[in-house]
Image 1 (cartoon, one colour):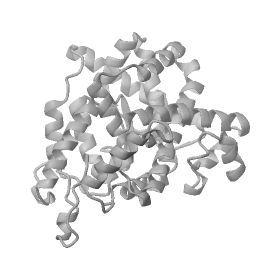
Image 2: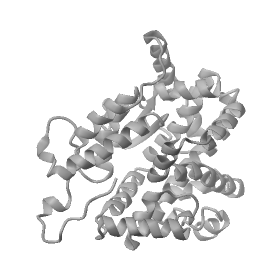
Image 3: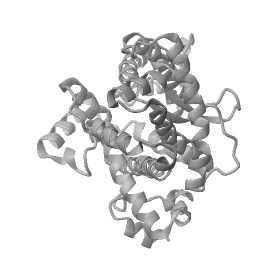
Image 4: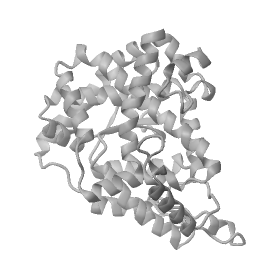
Length: 359
């Protein structure tokens, strides 16, 4: 999604139009692809097993990580694709530091740009709704506890993935829950992470003061010169950042790399004892991440940075593996102390430098 630049003397409301998240959710639900066809009985069984697996995953994750000991174990929300779209449309405005416009509240939408942005957001939500197996959402409010943060699991996507991989369903569902519960533990044990992410995302979404034409020109120059391949596979959206936003981009990338790599490390540490077929699942899932996409999917993946996320798993896990092997998990957990103890972007591939600087 891009933001149209407004003249400097335009009213303040016009300079920062709200995204019509109500329109985004409505459109996203309409165009999202349906999940696998199953009976109601089968889907109820999947929901029940995922809810149970999300609770069973909590204790071993806490034991391996040494995080979140003694905190309440919340109930996961098991959703279909439309339910995930609604949940995302509610939480994304909070992540970007804005207000949600889901529902009947047209006063939140300042002008037609909000509707245009809402339509773009709806298409993105529809695409993502078929790709996400689960996530921990630190920006929404849990219905039961009233506290920030909810664990979301998208049942039809988990079912589709386990069928594609020919995985043992109970093993695959627990394996997914181990990953997502690790994210829940990361954020619940370190509440400052949500604000840190929100602050840096807000910096990224600030108006950079350049026109759409300037932005497109810079993207074309970057792609033609090969600079789009700097720092790995990053995605075209990241080329749109103005120079003053690049530090925030680096911090967001490092945080995402650390969170994903830590979760993969925990899955491998816990998996063999709890998931008998974990080696087969890991091999199949890694191949699934690397599989070729059709041209449209490749374009969308580049635009929203999904290939960067895939790279995060590999680089982040290598960082965590190396640090834990060298100093142990207790010393590694120093990384969660503050923004200053987060790895620098150059340290992700050189964990010894992080150890020397921080420990």
